[in-house]
Amino acid sequence: MGTREFHECVIIGAGPAGLGAALYASRAGIEACVLEKLSPGGQVLTTDWVDNYLGFEQGVAGYELIEHMKAHADRFGARFLSKEVSTIRGDLNQGFDLHLATNEIINTRAVIVATGARPKQLNCPGEQELTGKGVSYCATCDGPFFKDMDIAVVGGGDSACQEALFLTKFAKRIFLVHRRRELRAVKTLQDKVLKHPKIEPIWDSVVESIGGENEVEYCMLRNVHTGEVRELKVKGVFIFIGIHPNTELVRGLVDLDDQGFIVTNEWMETNVPGIFAAGDCRSKPLRQIITAVSDGATAAYGVKHRLL
Ligand code: NAP
Image (cartoon, rainbow, N blue to C red; front, side, top):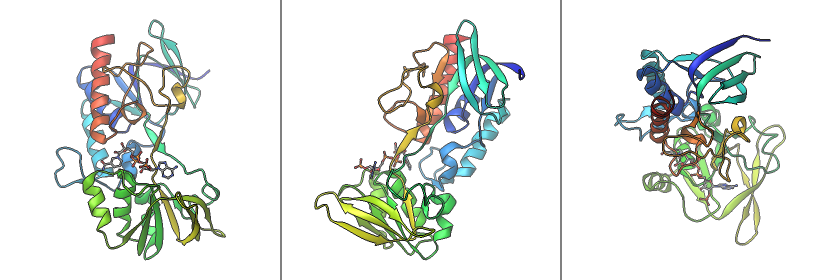
């Protein structure tokens, strides 16, 4: 039997939502502990440049923004532990037992789930085998490996456009492969992408497969209207086709929507009293850093005013 400790409130995940919750909880006098399996930051850490976080009018590097957020939560006494939660048991009356991968148990009155989301996969032949060998989901991490090379970026949303622009620093040519003829991204990003000399859109096309001996050499594209399949010679395929919620931990415990995102009310309460959710793992219309932070603040406020 491992050790057992108690915290008034446990926040699972230290991305912007978890850090927002940590700041607001600790500042409200709640004894809060943040659990994060890796290091604080979440998806922002894989974002090179954040251009739309209020207060940083010139933009800010993703890692730098997280450093500020973490330092801010630290200042009010939030405790951070590098631990992974495997299961949650219990209820509001007995408290919740969070079973950790290390066999320890943390008991708490309130849980804020801020586990975020991860990139969706194409699920096409070659994708898995060539991940890390030319297939990537993180331009900040892998962009510099593609200096003066031709690469493909898949997707038409904010992520695909923003990361394609970042990759222009390194790549020779970027083929932006999108399944429609119109981008989903916000207008300012679309404009920048469409007039960038290094970015060439390939419309109405999907990736059928990715191939190469020991690293990516090409991908096969299919035109969704004509059915025509053609080879695109590229050294890298960066995939930004949306996100998948990290909600496996609470599947079967709290209500999820049909995409697997956690359903909450406006206090960020799930259908299980005592369990709150915040950030990208929550079912909501706008997933941005600013809305994640806001969810975190509201969840901490909910813990204070509806629970403790
Ligand atoms: P997203 O907005 O869901 O866009 C996904 C894109 O991938 C869409 O263009 C979609 O095509 C395409 N797609 C989806 N499944 C596909 C498949 N199987 N094959 C080919 N293409 C596929 O996802 P995101 O760009 O990752 O953004 C996620 C969230 O983070 C959004 O809320 C976004 O606003 C936010 N975000 C914001 C910023 C920013 O503000 N700077 C930056 C990054 C992300 P269709 O258009 O045809 O559906």
